Length: 395
Image (tube, rainbow, N blue to C red):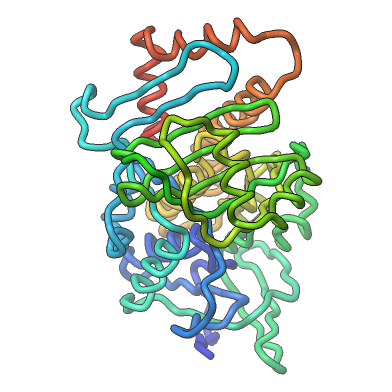
């Protein structure tokens, strides 16, 4: 177990050892003299531990630049650039094709397996010198005071008490801290389950990411090696349960039938894992000496692949605001500035992913309108530029 001392008041305690929590901790570690504790419920990963997460993240160019700056070697397992983005809808004419080269770019971003990104963040955390970590440990309760927050932790069989000027909730969709603060949530159940895995196709993907909308849910392919791709296929929960129980051959036939024949025959599939899809949007992201970031602040539909990118922007913005308020970490003024800085980006990104998911899945007779939208996105320069900037994660 890694531990931390507790004689004095900490500047920041980050609760949550996920991707966004680690990113924030790394950003704060670059600020000399700031005393930061990363509190994580899970023990340090073992090299022999099973690898369970089959997700693949589409990191926008803004995210890759930020991770480079933080010293996160996310590409150590191989580079998987996104050079093209192809969006279409089954049964509709028209499509949108965005090419990085047409905008003077080598790529819009990178595809990184979740396991690879988590390992790279963990390696970067291990290289820090000023950062304190406590794991495994669980936050039992907390109480905000005028100038600090009192924390009670469960560390093994022991109880530990700490004080911090700022408590950060990076503890995921079912955030204990957000729930304790009774922060209202806007929520919507999409009544869909995303099946995530990796597959092999017959034809070269050539760095193209595909988003294809169908009547039963979207299906996305994210380029890995020349003929390997991360697959995200959304289905109604009962249909997803059937698909998860299929043989590999039957599952590949189903996925290929939903996507189409553009990439030839689908040959191999990895482990399949289900992820229920829902929208959760916290109506506020600050409380008395508390900031809420990442999935604790918003869990959005994976359409557009903005979930982690949005959470990373939360972490980077919070680190910048903390740096600007070194004498007032956790103050009302600092938290108000953070909330305002994140308001527009959070609202716009959540609205976009939600509206796109509903619009493309609608049963209303709007096929021509959807086709027009796809054609417009490719041929109207201002709209195309907006989509390109969004794909790269710049705001």
